Length: 496
Ligand code: ADP
Image (cartoon, rainbow, N blue to C red; front, side, top):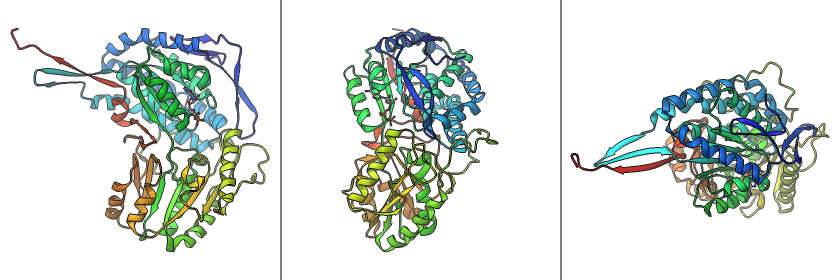
């Protein structure tokens, strides 16, 4: 059983040295959920030492042996699926059904799929007189955020462990309790000591010590662009491999032949997933100028598809399911929970105020506190029109339930120009009655993943950004590649 006064280091619960504790709140009612240790640089060093000690043995095991351990770990996680979903609903504020299906279902699928992905890697091959080997890259530090806390952990640690790396995880201080359950599952699955270590605390207190540690080989980070830059600079001092999964301001391009009603309603939904706290949120809806007023009307009525709810209220009767192909893309009607924290709410409301101040027009929502939600970090689903490309609501990632309508002149060329008019390049969507035309536009958008019409998220396809959305790819076999090194051994002529 885990102990919330401790870190998980070297295969045991290690009581935190400092008496400082970080408070974790339930965003739905602002109540204190509990505390976690504020880890220190010394504890970071202890965890790195444990991971270094465990590396040689773990990396030298066969893929079959490691697959067996990963399967045990996955089974122990599945045994905790309902508790994980409840925990994420409490600490992040995701509605219970979403927590079960996506917040927990998706990471379980990622864990489940590792042995298959490992079997697809070419571990050794001959190139002339050379033997080319793929080997574990070494000790990995995984730094993760709060919005899809377990998914982001799984996308890093499952492939890293699968290929033979040892890991130190520093989960978000806003949503850390799911990581306790994960460590508990690792312990029950009898992962060898030190193969997975979990250290709790803030970025400044413990994260930066991990990133800067000279014995760490790879840093895999998901979070904001500001922090990503700091992490990248720190890691580069000791020439570490760095993977960055950062923000986005993703365009949803409605071409002039698309079914406007369907595309706008879906567009509103795709900007509101997890209350807009999604790095791939399609937060800009691009429509031909002549259709803008019609799009505004549809968008204004589509917000009714997204009522605010107490995220725990629907807990009864919802069983976590393993996310599967049978579950199509997200529905267009779903409820929204609160934002994760008071700071996040303030930041989003500030963006909304700035949008109004800059001359954008509110089609729905606004900065006011939603009626009936006197407590909790709730924000109304908000839609802006009359936007211009220089406005902060159009340029910057808001990370809340805020959608900007943008009008382009109607040609595919101008749609592509507007779609690419951002320093980000994480995601995009293209909607058209003509899939060939949509594909042609999709190919011209500079983003790591582009969806066409109702195509659903593919958890085995590579995930990552172009431009300032980061570098490196997660998920599928690409997720494993990120933690591999390549070695060539030149063999002597036979008989020498
Ligand atoms: P968010 O607030 O969206 O989670 P952040 O980028 O601030 O985004 O945080 C993402 C993760 O990075 C968190 O686990 C956080 O503790 C960690 N972090 C923040 N600052 C640093 C830092 N200087 N070094 C390492 N990790 C950090």
